[in-house]
Length: 233
Image 1 (cartoon, one colour):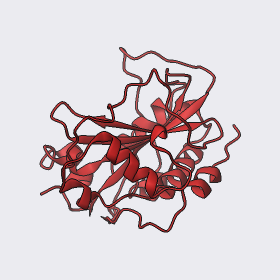
Image 2 (cartoon, helix red, strand yellow):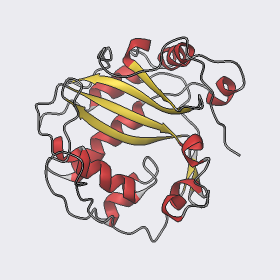
Image 3 (tube, helix red, strand yellow):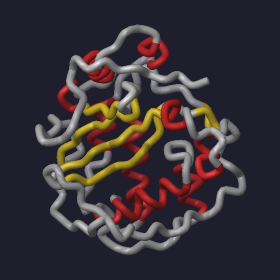
Image 4 (tube, one colour):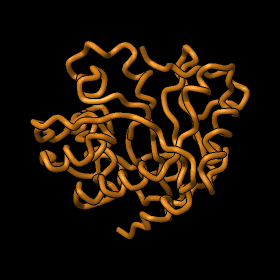
């Protein structure tokens, strides 16, 4: 697999401040058991046409999960306070995501520790590698290295300031584009829940990892849609 992994880092670099968060990878972080393909999800092996970099807004995800043991490392506050986290890097085949390309083994403690601050859930790491990473790379180290480089390249607008005023999906896309050179509003999709709160920001990428216009067949929030940002608490 040929990966121009530094293309996005160069394109998205700017002088704006990246998101501020604190993270302490647990000292006893263990390996992540292999994730098995659910019986109701197909194995889909297709030529890759592009990628999606999915960034999850952690305060909204953790809003109702702070006391759930399975989400402790991300949501309890014991191991860090997170803003955007890496949900995953997904290969795209013109609107259909290749997935579950082959069986996997457990992720080593070294991998889980190295990637914890970007993806603070070993369960999520195992799932993303099994479902999406196996369609991109032969080794989990390669998949997570690429994902982490791209995640670290993204700059973020002031989410606290944006959360305190009326906001539309179009305005939030514009705010992201303004602090990332080479990124345009048409390269950005937003996932908003039924209550109108931001869940994810998704960047559409071409096969060479450069930002590209999101395919018209992909579901996305309309520019005029009202959007709210949960700050936590």
